[in-house]
Length: 591
Image (cartoon, rainbow, N blue to C red; front, side):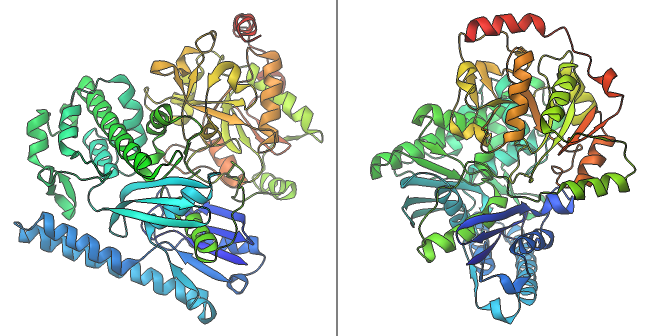
């Protein structure tokens, strides 16, 4: 049986294909269309999934759609009317906007029905947004019984859901009504800090590490305490703003004494505000989990929804609950609902037995050697080709030891927001000025945002304390107290590290590269950051990779067994001597 899962039409749209319970394809529309925040019907993602099925719509048995437009419109309208009861003009504007959104969503639904054809129209199942998040979080986990919590800003008129997963069944305990949303609050603080809401919340997360939570009590007052594990925002902190959306009211500004203009905030105020909202959200989620786990005698927790893209938040929950008791799917945000809807239909509705899904997400497009060469020839690119993959890996090691930054393009593209070693930019963490070179010539990112490092999964315990979530980079690790010699530029306050663990089974090419690099470097550790140009999605196709390589400061590009360099290989691979002093130190400590 083939099930096509589709996300909602709002943002971060995606499509997924299940075939007899096996995940055959999942991809975000933005990565294929090369638009950062794709909305509407994910046409390119659907086309890719259907191609993996080997045919068109006629090969699909049913469709699971993460959208209930009418229900969502009613819930949002009621919530807006309640908060704006004394401001009929604002409420009226909000209703006009909601009707426009409803019309667009119904139009996309008609378009989907037209494309699917009459045979499939009656086999389109609408799955609630947060129920899709619940299914993605629980059915991809290894737990047989777990508490499942989903939180985002809004989906189908709800801001979250609390449920219990048992075997193939999902039992909803309660909804988190809109607009009582930690994700909404986090996005508003992100906007106040001068970052783009719904896109740059990760910047708020990393900025929080450098501040003291001096405004924490304001957020505690805003987030009403609850004994039953529910979540409520004090309505007095909410108001209608421009474009008829909710904003923080004057009460928030009076209590914090902060200037409303982001440009007038000092660096200390910005980091303190980020630290305050980060800690307040972590405390509130922890409070809800503790209450519900005690009430229902549960020990494992699955988390879904955009809020849990926050790996610093997940790491703090792991510290309280234990590293083996928290699970976050590879794509906890909106793009993950396509797979969640398909899994819900398969397991909960059809009662098909669960499978143990591997902890990797390489479900996107892959390209054969002939397809890659055709693109290279068409671009008139100069390249070398190695028949033996071992020789290619050795060349990559020499480039990395020489302080070069390489684009790494191998296998099928990863699904989710993070580069997991198939579409990555790699560099030696011991190379001189590597962080500055990555920031200035490739990533163009703020000074406070950390880079991740990759390490073979079996070697990770020698240097770090980490959990299985580091395979998908959904949590953070800690440097072991006895370990010295790791570059300080990549260690965060408190000894935290953005860590990507690599298994030989899931990613043999990168695992082999790390092992070979470790034979000549202080440790089998490489910087791993996303392969994309500034402001663009992760690369997917060979053409995307060549364009990003040519238009940035990347020194070399390795695609399958093809190697492209901007200078002759002999000049590019002169080994750097600066790393030798670290090797003896690490080998003594970790022996």
